[in-house]
Image 1 (cartoon, helix red, strand yellow):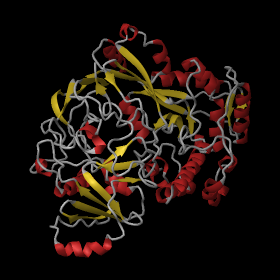
Image 2 (image 1 turned 180 degrees about the horizontal axis):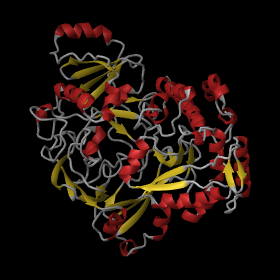
Image 3 (image 1 turned 90 degrees about the vertical axis):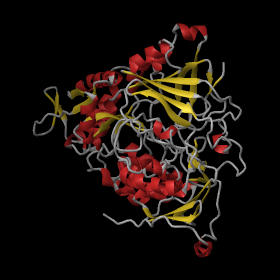
Image 4 (image 1 turned 60 degrees about the horizontal axis):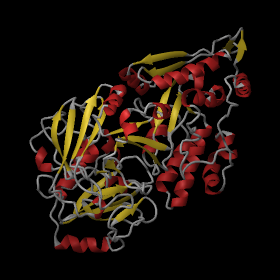
Length: 605
C-alpha cells in the first residue's frame, strides 16, 4: 500500500506566509467552484435561486419510513443509521446547489481556491462557524475529520482520500489538499466531506456503532428524542451559527423533523393515509392514478404535487452477466432485448403511461441521441476504439420497438435470427446449439419486488415462444444482496442512478478494474478499454463541451453493448403532502432530489 504523507498540524506563521505567497499568487479565493466553467451565482448572491428566502420558520414535518435503525453514527461502516443523518446532522466546507449540474458555494468555508490544473485545493473557514454546542469549528477539526473519515470512516470516503498526497494548514483558518493524480472533480469532492468535532471523539472508539454517543455537528439540526426502530426527531437549533450565510437562506425551516419507522411500504402508505405522516413519495404511476383518492385528498387536506426534473434516467431494468457464457455474445443479448416487449408490458402494468429509458443518460443534456450517428467531438473520442466496438456506437443505436401487441411478431422473428447467428436454433421446440445443449438461464429476483416479478412473468412467456424457459429464483433481500455481490446470477434486476455530474463513481459502475472485484457495482462484468477511456476523458476534460461529449460517447458504448434490458423511468416525482407544508414555485434542475425535501420546504397553515 502506498504511504501517504500527512504533516502534523502546525502553527501558521509569517515565514510560512512569505513562502506560500509566491506559490499562491496565481490563485485567487472564490466564493464557489463549478466542475466546469464558473458558478452561475455571483459572489454577492443572497440566496439560492430555488429557495424561498422569506419562508417562515417553525412547524413540523413527519416522514413515514420503512425499516429501522440501530445506530446514530452515519459516517462509519458498521450499524444501520438513518440515511438522512449524513446530510442533516453535519455540514461540509462547501454546499451544493442542485440548480446547477455540479457547483458548490461556501458553507463552513468562506472561500475556495485551486491550482491552475486543480492539482490542489485550499479552503478558508468562516471565522463565525460553530458546532451545535457553541464551540468553534477549527482547522484542527477539519483536518481530523478528513483523516479519520478517510481511514476509519465508511468506504464512500476512502477513494478520494487515497488521492490526497498531502494535507496541510496554510493559515489560521485555511487548509490545503494536494493531490497525487489528475482529477478535476477532486476539489469538489473534498469540499463535501462532513466536518465532525474532534474533541467529542477523544477517548472513544470512532468505529463503534450504537446510540450511546450523539454525534455533534454544525448543521441547523441536532438529534432530539428517539427510540431505535420506532422514531427519531431532529430539532432545529435556535442558535444555529449559519443563519445569515447566503447559502442557507430559505433552508432548514421546520422546527422539528420526525421520522417514524414502519414494517414495509404498504404500512407506510396506510400510515400516511391515516394522517400519521406529512408527506409521501409514490413511485408507482398506476397507484398514483388509482389509489390517491382517499378522503383527505378529496377534502383538500392532502395535496398531490408532481415535481419535474432534468436528471438523467440512469438505468433500471434487467442486467445480463457477461461473465457467464450464456450472455457473453452480444447477439444473444440483442436477442433478449428484442424478445422483451416493452410496449405491451408498459400497457399491461402502467396503462402505457411510463416513458422508456432509451439510454443510460437519457432525459438529460448528457444523453446520446437515439438512432443518430456520432458526430463532432463524440466521434473523435470514439474513433480510436471504433474497430472494437459494436457498429451502432458510431452509426447510431435505438432500442427495439414493438407494435404493442402481445405477439410482437417482428421482434420475435429478429430475436430468432440473432440466436441462430450466435449458434442457437429451435430443435424439438427448444432453443439448442449444434451439440444439442439447451439454452437457458437463471433470473434472480428479490421477494419484495412484486412489480418486477410481474414484468418477468410477461417476459418469460414471450421467451417461451422461442423455446427458451429461464429459471426464476426469488430470494429474500439479504440473499439477493449476497448473490449479486458475488455475481451469482445470469440475469438480475438492476438499477443505477446517474447524475448531471458523473465522475469517479463511473469507474465503480463499469470500469475494467471493478469487473472481477466481488461486491463491485460492475454487475455486467464489462471490461472495455473504450469505456475506461471515456471515463478518463470525462474526469480530465478541460471544458464543458468536452465533458458532455465524453459522457455522450460513454452513453453510446454502454447502450449499444446491450448489457441491460431497460424498462421505464419517471420524469417527475410524485409527492402527496399535507396542505400545510409548501415548496417554492421555482424548482431546481435536480427536482425532487437531495436538498429538496425537507430542506427548502416550510410549514404555513
